[in-house]
Length: 173
Ligand code: K1U
Ligand code: ZN
Figure 1 (cartoon, helix red, strand yellow):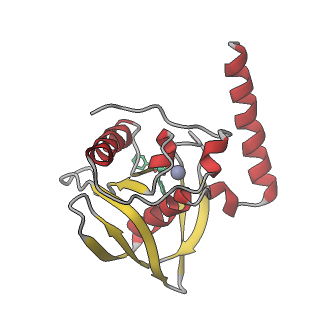
Figure 2 (cartoon, rainbow, N blue to C red):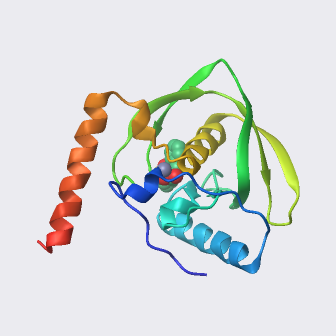
């Protein structure tokens, strides 16, 4: 397993719409292993393949509590089937927007479907952090970032900050 470099804002790859996975190949299994390794190393509770530069519809997640056994999940071609009208607010972060956290309001509960690495189709209900995380990750597959839910003022501020960092890094300063 390999820890892959993370794509960071303002990299335009983060705005790509990722392509569906048509078969669970060795390459797909290797990507899943690497994404889990990268997610745990970060550390994060979720990761979309595009965050390691691969525009395919795969997500890894583990929202288990630190005192319990890890519960790694690999979601292939995940989709939201239904969402509650009730909303909840969670302070979200993003491994592609390091050290920036803001409250985002989303449906409190969702029903979602995905294929696992065994090729089985799974339907599942989610609430709490799992619901927030699966929505955040599926957004990544569609080129959507959590900052898109913030005011234009906040989004512009964070974009400016990360563009400056990228410029400084490119100049070697
Ligand atoms: O997709 C990502 O960028 C990962 C992101 C997922 C996420 C976090 C919070 C709400 C919704 C989605 C992260 O994992 S950011 C890091 C983080 O939240 C965390 C890290 C260590 C322990 C607990 C949480
Ligand atoms: Zn993210």
